[in-house]
Length: 326
Picture 1: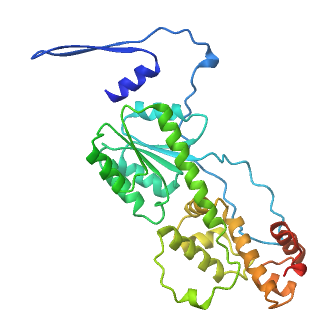
Picture 2: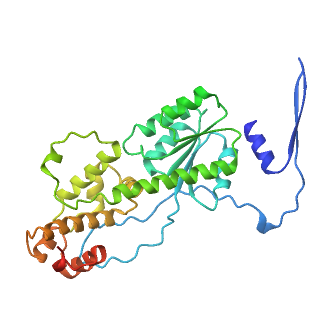
Picture 3: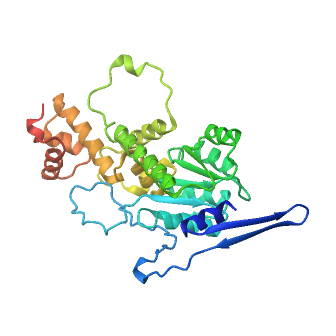
């Protein structure tokens, strides 16, 4: 009934109810006949299965990397809903704004979440195999997917239900029938908040040697911080290897290349190549500042096989040549 009410409102119709105690109820749906030109019709895209081309080499300074084919950079939404009509309706709301993948129950939704790492999930509460509460709990307790915002939609709108959903980590909770404009704004705001958080990790490269007292300080790290700590540790282990590639990186992170790319992009808004290069440049800035070697020695120590290339990317990032850096 919640879905019918929402669809009828969108189509500017009305619902009439006649009820007789002991005999039942009759619902009548009235829809206006509207003349619509073909160009005014809403085009609902099919679900998008992403197969973005992966860059296999993180950094080979002697190789000229051609621009990759254009990839759709729109945010990826996962719709987890057992009602196919409602899935189609939600897709129509965001048709021109986001990419989509879909799941028809919570278990399939969890599998696709861990495989594709969408930018946001819109999830129903009452579903077979795994309900919305179980789905949300699983997503938020996994270090790979805990950063993904979850918007829960349900006809169970009591305070207890809302509190349970929020306690399990749901980022927002909307009652059916929902207002389409409100859903659009909430989804937009959650994705915007994630983009702001990206700035924290995109600027987390080493800039100065860590103080001795900081190393002995016990700090409780979030799952995202632990993930980024592991990323940096693996890069450190391969700093001098110009052939360090995405497959090796992903394997040591115990992820697929797609998972690593999407998780790192979600946290830093940088590709794997960009993050590794910027990390190396930040290390170079420290070494140059402390005069621990010549420019060429530091460049080769950090996996740059070409000194002109190293000087070029260093200048692009810091606005100074390596030999001028202080």
